[in-house]
Image 1 (cartoon, each protein chain N blue to C red):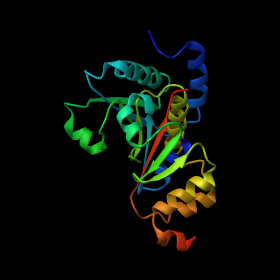
Image 2: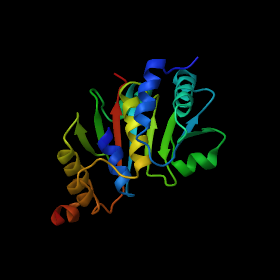
Image 3: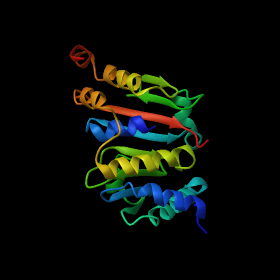
Image 4: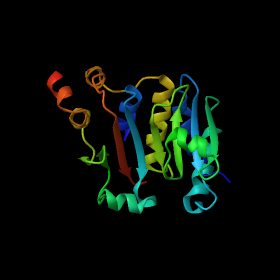
Length: 141
Length: 72
């Protein structure tokens, strides 16, 4: 049984038509992390099945130490959105509700290789030379 | 949320986490998340609520240090 309803699936498929190049979701979970872990994994599997350009890789937070270090993951469930390059885009927790919309946005922007930010913002951002870590706290509703 | 991820996409020095607050209560308490969205910049800066692109950008540039501000 999937977590994405049929009517939602149709809408998501339509949205994912905006994708240009393939995108990979790299997901980290762990056996003990069952409260949201299983649901999150199921949701990502359902999502990845909706579009040929979207793939999913799953790693165990405790066992796959090398990948955990590579992606700098310090808590689970965690999901990275990337193409050939890792941009540092992460989701922690189940991407449901508000976060699901944000996940679709991230997938499409990564796929298109460019953000929807204004030209002015992009220009200003090009001057950022120090490491900046943004943590945005959200809730599903 | 979109702004943070978009900025991560545009600049390699920027990384952005979207965190489901209720699943990580300790972290939420640590960063005093009582309302969402709440954005923490490099552990110290805060953006409260949803703000326009301009204001989000200003906060990020401030975190980049005074040099970037001079160049604006």
